[in-house]
Length: 159
Image 1 (cartoon, rainbow, N blue to C red):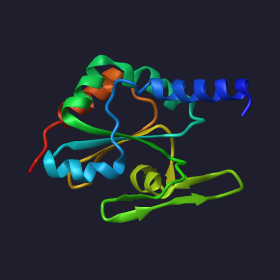
Image 2: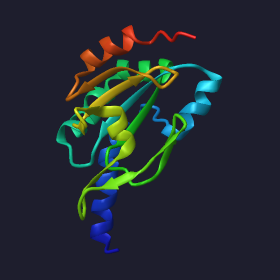
Image 3: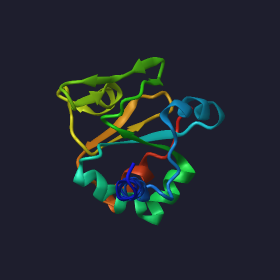
Image 4: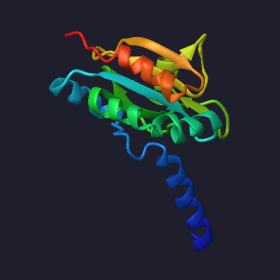
């Protein structure tokens, strides 16, 4: 790889991850084991690499200190790329990438969690209880203030 290409690749990856730098992001596959130790609600942020509103949320909403603290203390937080190509086992099911064209497609789990009328829009926030039941779903950009309201009223976990 040419040095300039490598630089831009690393810069791009760093820019994408900077929005989540202080939030604890859990791999979805680990959440079920974590639930055995401590029951928590799960917040899933469905996004794509090309979504400008997703990037804005990463760089504003998820950088808010109160949002980060609440996510770390009370939730399991997962960021799931809706075009993820790897197979994911979650909630006793296996989800895979489904191509829809030469360079297009979707991940079945993004569709399962974030679909409305059989389609997913980005960004989408999905709140699941420890039993992996969807208790809240929001499509579109959400400010830190609005997300805090949702997180604060939903941080109680029923056994």
